[in-house]
Image (tube, rainbow, N blue to C red; front, side, top):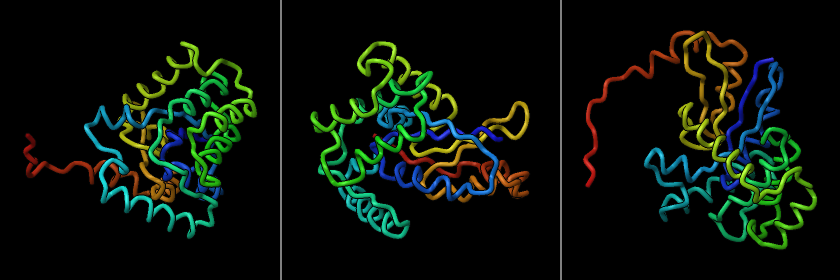
Length: 220
């Protein structure tokens, strides 16, 4: 089976949509998924980006698109009472639940449902306490080891070139090559084609990225 890594932060509605669709999108492929939670804010800061909910026109578009995609996908996704919110308690809970800091699919599902099903506040203390009790983490989510493990996940993502979530990582096609990263909920079919051996990836994957930079935008 091909090892696949799903990099995600539950603050992202696109991560939720991709998580829900993943088994269907990869049906017929031989694969095993590892779910690795990361802090999206740290990825954005590293690459000098704003999140899609951090300026008004894109925030409005994001929520409209997500609601439409959920309807089209048959997902029960519903926007929480307020967004964005601080996802650190949920990220640390996920890390605390999983063996070696890697939560199971079922544990991830419970957290995504907590955030994106029902329309309640994702950061409500009583709801967070109930979720923690239900998941019964093996470690204290607030302990130093869990916090360090989450930082390690995020650093590992950055080292691979992950710039946002969700990102699906497939192994390098050959020794010395970089892993193949598929960003966004709309990249699952592309990742599935790669897993199935689509010959496009033998040449075009590298070729299309070798473009010279024609101009750069001045800032400041």
